[in-house]
View 1 (cartoon, helix red, strand yellow):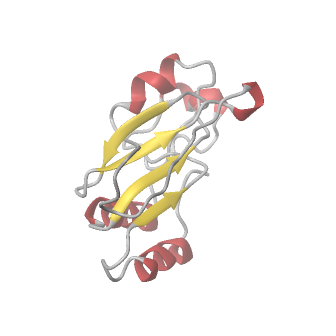
View 2 (cartoon, rainbow, N blue to C red; view 1 turned 45 degrees about the horizontal axis):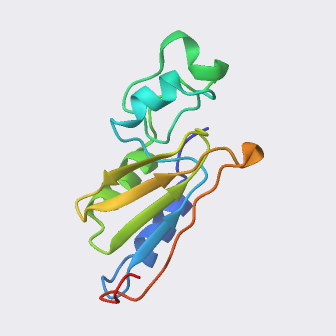
View 3 (cartoon, helix red, strand yellow; view 1 turned 180 degrees about the vertical axis):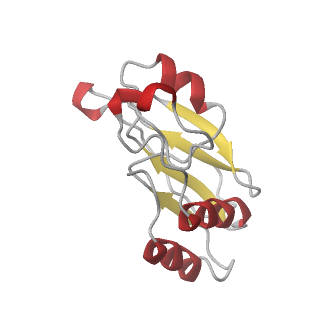
Amino acid sequence: MNQVSPAQLEFFRQATATDDLPVMLLLHIPLFVPQLKEAISSGPFSRRPMAEPEPAANGGLMGDPDAEEPNTQATQEFMAAVDGCKSLVAVLAGHIHTAQHHAIGKAAAVQYVSDAGAFGGYRVVDIVPQGSPRL
């Protein structure tokens, strides 16, 4: 099920309680952003993102039995917390097996989704101190 548990929500809230350090969120399943709709429906592996606002048609993509279930309260609160997290700089995810990158949240973070590793897909992420020159 592509949902956040209450314990995961509480962990995220505690980890991001202060804005003194940048936050990079690593998830297997990407967070829903409207731009993912086309990639999900036309990609070679149709997989659902987390917190999709409306249920997928026909019982869900790839026969997902949970596709018709609405988002839990914890998932909705998690998405709101991510959206409002001022220190969020990036979200790294996979699952949908098609390379994507889109803005997410009010802090203008970027969600990077990788191609399928089984087929040679990967992303290189350079982590440098804020304000450092990029070479």
